[in-house]
Image (cartoon, rainbow, N blue to C red):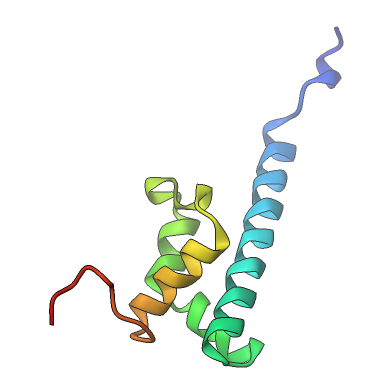
Length: 88
């Protein structure tokens, strides 16, 4: 085996970044569909959210969650919906 047959840290980091960007796109699109906000507004909500910070920092493996789940978490964070388990 050649040393060049193994992925480098740099290529691995790039792959992770690309996968995260794909996830961000899916979250923004789902948020836009569910809230009726346009894509620019949805991007603003997402990129200024705590959810974005947590995902980008790798907290609790949130990047492993589905886009629909994460869009719902974003909607909860921004007050578009209330958690079903909370008593009023």
